[in-house]
Length: 263
Ligand SMILES: C[S@@+](CC[C@H](N)C(=O)[O-])C[C@H]1O[C@@H](n2cnc3c(N)ncnc32)[C@H](O)[C@@H]1O
Image (cartoon, rainbow, N blue to C red; front, side):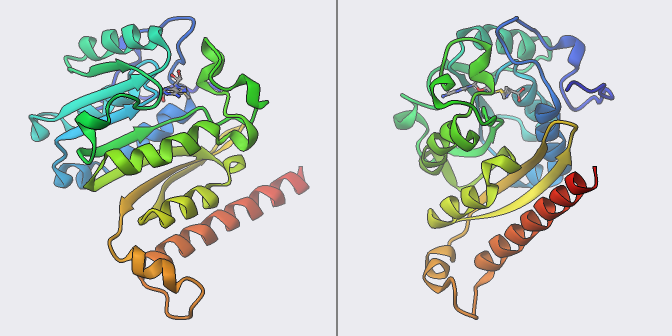
């Protein structure tokens, strides 16, 4: 469902966002991701990223907003955006140019072909993937359906993104990922925990259609030790971070079930 949005000088302006019938228009999930970035803006500025990247840029609303909110204070940042939809390339170019932002656009599957250039270099990755549970054969089909078709549990594309993110993120790299409850975000966090990442829900929002989360991941160098300790009473910091996130998620799903029982 589309919502009206207050104009803010540090996010892309909807009236300047280009469009195409085959390209995903900014929607509640896009706004949730931008709001999560905005809420974390002070940390992002202190993070001093040099390479930022969006996987699945669609209209370019998110990567343009990220560039605007980092602004002059983070000059010299290189912005990349990928999408399998070639129409999204043109639309993102128009959106970013309309805001005076330069984004390097690459039409590819996730980040295919970018390893040699970007491995270990991406400081901030933002992803609003196709997450809607659908029949698996709808995933990756041409056109607008590829914007949302996520296959079983909505995680087919997400599962492809996680190892790529692990390869491309720098040592201090952060990833902000949009999920819905049906994606089983705790499983996604556990997958990333095995790769050495801690996680935190930075935004949770329920719409009429879905319960969205924006999860922030970062490398935690204690986590290799911690993985061996999971299950012991003496959990180290990252295990507790993920555990508290998992309990946050189970409380949310409990409330959701509670609401549906009441309706
Ligand atoms: C939910 S839309 C999000 C668009 C935009 N980021 C936003 O938040 O408004 C998902 C985007 O991912 C793109 N996409 C789907 N599968 C992809 C893949 N394997 N590699 C790169 N992009 C993909 C779609 O074409 C679509 O533009």
